[in-house]
Length: 172
Image (tube, rainbow, N blue to C red; front, side, top):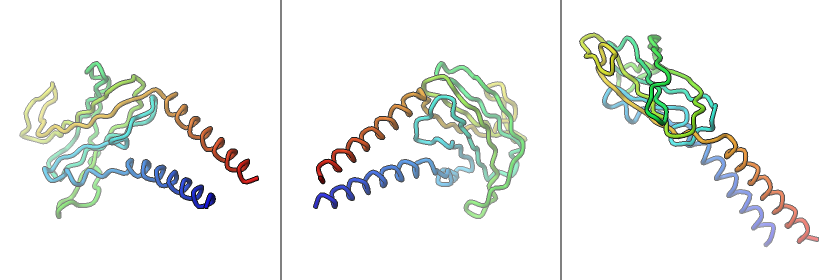
């Protein structure tokens, strides 16, 4: 009976770990219905300070020739202003070609960050000092101190080690 409880506990921990990693695999295809979407590799997950954050902008509008990314820190100041004009083809959505643009940075300031993707195409208007903007989409994430992640993992490891020791002593 005790072995079954131990196996159930370990299976639960493995399930929780796999579920947390699955949250990182987010595809913004569901929100591409408007023709424009933006997401990040940390969507819905706290970002450890100094980690690479990749923001991906997607569109089905073939007229978009570039996307300007505005990275805003917790004080709402633009820290990075980056232009991507590569327009990589990345499959289809609803029968339309999907073009992707991306920007990568490693924010180290703790707090709530935001990234705006300004989609640019002919006949757009000037918004936020950027010309020919036809759509704006945004994503956000929360940067946490790196020590919190290490501390959490250390606490989990200590808990599992002490549980294993307790189970081994109880078996004898």
